[in-house]
Image 1 (cartoon, rainbow, N blue to C red):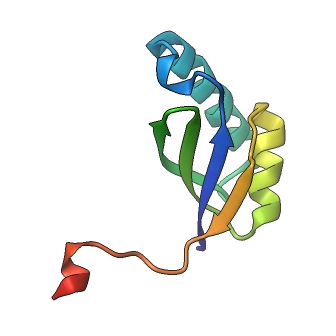
Image 2 (cartoon, rainbow, N blue to C red; image 1 turned 45 degrees about the horizontal axis):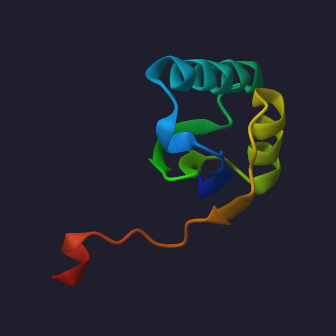
Length: 90
């Protein structure tokens, strides 16, 4: 299944409490449950005022629908074309 990186602009993201992140995560997971197995959240990175989420989904449309249902921004959605890691240098 295609992999996507979603950039979400969340002012003050780095300063949100664990409880606030739990609430945001629960909204995301609940939306995913409603949508079925066609979309999967792998993990997210919080960096300053942005959150970078990695998802598996058949297309960008499903990513946007998830963001709408979860009440989350999806400022930029980019399909991952290649994965690089230290083994790529060998």
